Length: 436
Image (cartoon, rainbow, N blue to C red; front, side, top):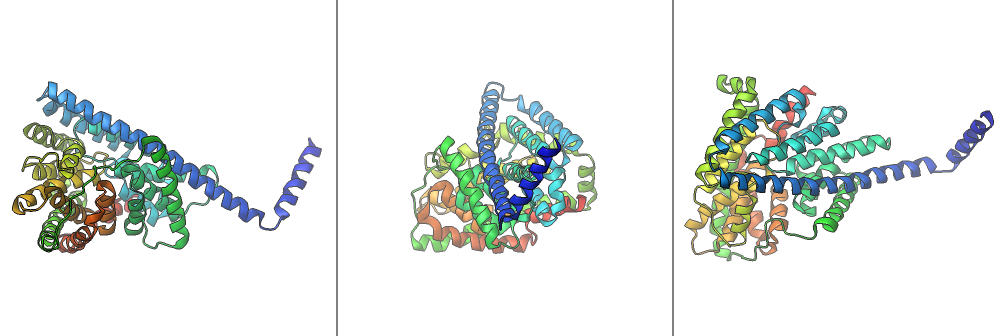
């Protein structure tokens, strides 16, 4: 035994004496952690997307047979999900993006429950349950959180030092995998997740995005999330519609952000009471969501993906009430404190808003006007104009609309700032930093 140990020690000493071997091993472990994490998060993102879509389908089929059952079932599930979240997984509440931002600012939080795999998996399950109850939630925020958690876990297993770049790469790959939008993943990392985007981090981000994207492409195939939109607008129409969509969408999106931030931390007695009784608040929010779904024929339940896709492809228009009702349903779901993202629901609200604009600009193609409405409102909410434009360009294959999209996004960002100076995700992340 002693002889074997001596040989091992001699071999280790000789191996470490090779010039540059430590650096090579560290680099190999870093690459293995990034590639392994990206493959795993790509697989989980695909499974999560399938589970979420299936949950929405099951709920719609159930509601079609029992149209008034959601009035009882939806509030009850909202309350149950929020109780479970508060009791066993408080770090899983809300979108998931603020959690990753908070950990990026304070790396100690990367080892806290914010980015533990248990929290992330719980969040995915609870988000699917919310979709099974008609909640107006998306899967992109939870995908970002679980992607960052996977990266943290892989780096911990391979004993690779944790850096903010690891979290940025995981979050970017999560956005890319959720929407099949690799460019948007990189843009999101630059605009939202990273305060300083160094070259080394850029390579890490692009590597993670490419690997997760290839996994998604190999299993789910090449697809355009909202369907192809081939319509374009004349220059004179762009000059008229883009400022209107940008100003109105930015103001409405800013109001949504201001509402969520106020509910999260404002000291108004009513809001303080709501935060003190989260389960009762969730019950009330669930009832609002259920009533809106019953009144609108179910169009406001879930992500709103199907309704938005039909509008983008020009196959069918929605009710004029879709946008306002979806706005309220998304706000109620977010205020409830249940796990779930707001990306996809916000895009649906923007589509409904864009359809209202199409009545004013009736001489222009409705899908193109709807797309500008989506851009204006989405930028108003998330205040990430570059990410918004690239997401919408990639999810609708509308490269001919890139200049109108950019113009709308710039105007919307300015308008939203006048209503709500603080960015939504950055504001929400402060609560996690403080508690961490």
